[in-house]
Length: 213
Ligand SMILES: O=C(O)CCC(=O)C(=O)O
Ligand SMILES: [Mn+2]
Image: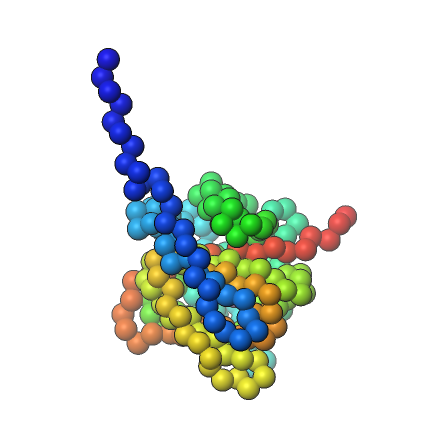
C-alpha cells in the first residue's frame, strides 16, 4: 500500500491574528492575513466571475450620479437595504460567498445575513465619505470588510469636525472589523488613486433587521 502524501501544516493552519486599531471611541480591528495569498487569489478570481455586478446610482449633494465602482447587494431572503435613497432587494448567495460568510462569522463571533460586494476596477474607482448608519443596521452595527486585490487606502474622519483621523492600508486577504460606536462617531472613505492600479474587490458583511411578516 502506498503512503498518503503528508498534509503540509502551513497550508491548513490559518494565520488569523486580530490587531486592535486605536481610534478614540471606535471599535476597530484588522486581521491582515485573514486569507492567505493563495486562498485570497482564488476567492478574487471566482467572485469577479460569479457576482452579477451592477453600477448603482447614488445621490450626492442633491444630484444623482453613477457610483464610481461596481456593486451587488447579496443576502438572505427579506434582507433588503436602502441607501442613497434606493432600495436594493438581495441577490442570492453564491457558493463562494457562502463559504466566506461562514469563515467571517467564525472569526467575528456573530452572524451576518447580507453582504455588499464592491468592485473597484482601477485607481479611478473609489467611495466618498459616508457612514454605514442606515436604521436597518441597528445602533452599533458590526461590519466585517474583506479586501481582495489591489491594496488601497481606507480613511476615517470624525463626524463632529470632519477632520481625517486615520488612514489604513487594506491588503489582499485582510479582514477589517468595524463595531461599537465606529459608525456613529466616524465616516470612512476609499479615496481614488492617481496611480494605475489593478482591480480591488471588497465584501462588507452586515446584519440587516428583517421585519417580521
Ligand atoms: O471598499 C471598501 O473597503 C469599503 C466600502 C464601503 O465602505 C461601503 O461599501 O460601505
Ligand atoms: Mn461603508
